[in-house]
Length: 410
Image (cartoon, rainbow, N blue to C red; front, side):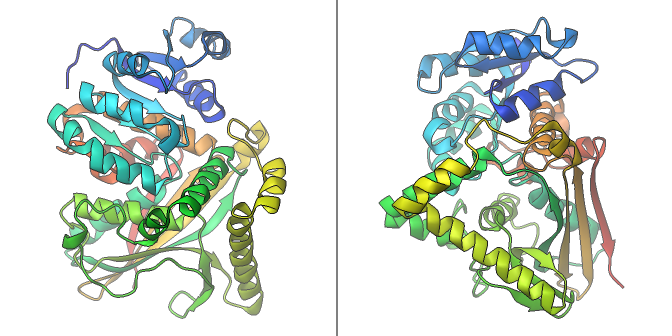
């Protein structure tokens, strides 16, 4: 990676909701890294910059359109790393990722799209490995808490000499925040893709859809996504589907394979929403399961899709500052190891998960890629947060109201 780039980090999509939050966060960093703002409209970029105060007053502005290959190539060549919020990524993100791979520029995004990551693995991974670029996907609430949570869990188990991870369950215990317009738009796009292409639908259903080499993955029985409430006797809880689980699980499994199955060859992983163990918890779990099914079903049928499009948030829309400030999340990752030991990792974050907290996660990912140098894993290509950044990102987030704690369970 060259060290003579004009910028440390370029925020692409800086005029969007999360882009503005990311830029505002970076404007508060001291000593200030070299930041530039990028997007389609110079006027809108100037308005964002003027709202950020004196620290950002001299930040360069880069006009770049996702459909203009030349402009995104120039953007990529100007910086050490890019933080991009411009999605859905399958629709808008491929030219920038390809340009970063070719230029040896590190890259962090917020994708939750299986098809996009699969496409990058197939089309830009080799180029990025040759140039030294780290193309790190899913650097927001999708999927940093899950991905880094399992990463630190594995480290804790290793330090104790307790074997490898086997049965591992992430349980969301608290979640407060607004609904992301960008996430809703991603869901719309994926529903449309599955309706148009049955091959894509089958790929999305594969628990190892993001594996670089599917034939090398272990055969561990049924690892299909959670679709109905289940009672977990060990935890004493009702567990229901977690809306992001169908994506996050694939990212975590990809991290395992990218790290040569460091978590274990018998590593089984699922994600759940947790509910109390009494009958009321079952009712809540069933209600959540039904609501998720209704949302996905409603998006696939014309008349209900039109109604949902009118009431659900659009990309660029987001919650109030109060909602963002008061949001939070917490999750416990329970694991049984190959020696029979049990461990739990607790991951928490302050701020609305899909907005305020995601802006911090994306910004710190881009800063780590730009500034942390030899502390980063010696990997290039299309990577996950755990495989591409790892401990430096854990350390950065711990300084900004995130916790990653690991304990053995007696």
